[in-house]
Amino acid sequence: MTALAEGLVETHPELVATIRTGALLAARHDVRFLVGVTPATERIYVGGGHAGLAVSITLRGPSSTQEDRALPAISAISHFPPLSLLLVAGQTASRYPHTDCTSWLEYGVDDVVESFPIALPAVRLDDGAVIVATPAAFTQVNI
Image 1 (tube, one colour):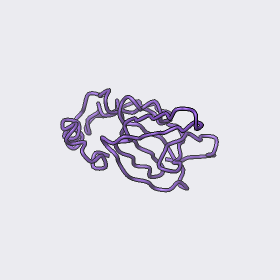
Image 2 (image 1 turned 135 degrees about the vertical axis):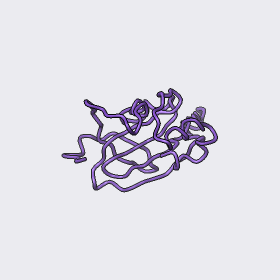
Image 3 (image 1 turned 180 degrees about the vertical axis):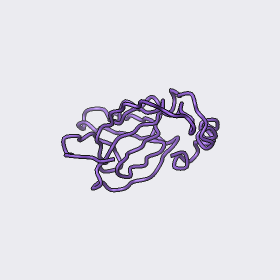
Image 4 (image 1 turned 90 degrees about the horizontal axis):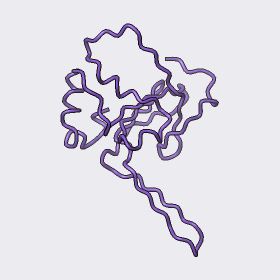
C-alpha cells in the first residue's frame, strides 16, 4: 500500500519506515487503513492519489450558484479480490463503507493474536474507482 501512495514517504516518513520493517505502530488519526471484501468477479484496480484532491462540482440551474467541494483523494487503493484495501485521510474515512483496520498496524510481524473477531463489508468499485457498498449484490465471498 505504501508504494502506491506516491509521496507518502515525504509526508509520513515514520509511518512508511515502520510498515516496511514490520514493527508495530501506534494508530494514527490522520491516516486510516480500511478493508472490505469483494467477490472474484470484481475487476482489479490498483492506484493512488496521495496528497491529491477529489473535487466535486454541483451545477444547479442557470440562476443558482455553483457548489464546489474538495476533499483529500484516496492515498492508495488495492482492489484485488477477495480484498479491497484503502489508505485514506482520517477526515474522509467515514465516507467509505470499509472497516477501519488502522489498529492492525499496532501488531508487529512477530505478534501472535489469539482472538481476532472482525466483520468486513462487501464492497464494489463504481466508475472512477469510487467505492460503494453493495452487500445485497453478493451471495458469498470466500477468503
